[in-house]
Image 1: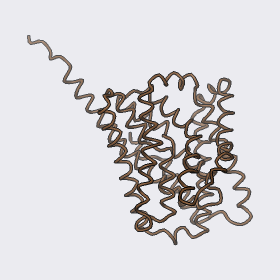
Image 2: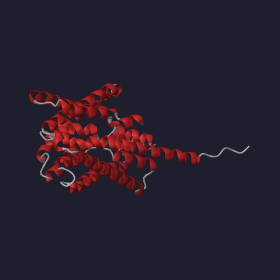
Image 3: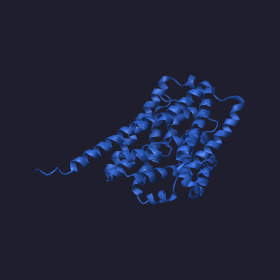
Length: 331
């Protein structure tokens, strides 16, 4: 639990943001660093494809009502709330920060933290594995498509014509990883600790390039403390609404406690690991540093809030088990 709350990876991200603020990439270094980030993005999605077992994902689709709830929260409820946040523009949110909120809302769910919190809360772990994995697979198609639809309607972001080429850049490495998964999947899982460092290193590299570009363009002159405070507030309200809606919907539709836990934790997460490289590809040539800020803040907010919520579910389960346990016989 303490590891989740501390989130050393977030500390590394903050360090990278600080480094890019002091030593941004500029001039002749931009092109080689951009090539390196393209390779890093391909590697991230290749490893995602190599890790996911097709048998596990296919087997989980039998619980279709639960998965439908998670997908609706991830790719319908979140985008609708993101569109509603547009009412805050330009009075409270700048157009660039709102673009980040909208991008955050169309991302897939996380895999690792969704499963970890579901396990801590005594939820349906097998369904969480399948639902979170499937969310990331569908996100390869749906996130670029939703970005194309929502941002084009606002007159920004990639055009619908560009979505096809974006899909190739994101999907092709993933498909190659899936094709090779029967041969290398076991090795990838066994070396997860080392390859996890490669994964995180790739994301940090993409963040460094994105924020370097933003800093050179005057990010910290454009962004005030009030902007950051408003952004945190929007992220908190967004997460609170999704947690409330998913909990109420699961209970209203008669899901078991275990399934409710899975729906709540898988449906309320947004993936930083997928979002960072996706932003680099989807918003190529734009201010990706500002666009990524809401996602980076949301990442830590969701970890802290869901850590508390998971412990609440776990404590409630323990109390119920104690109440069900028969009293010892009197002598």
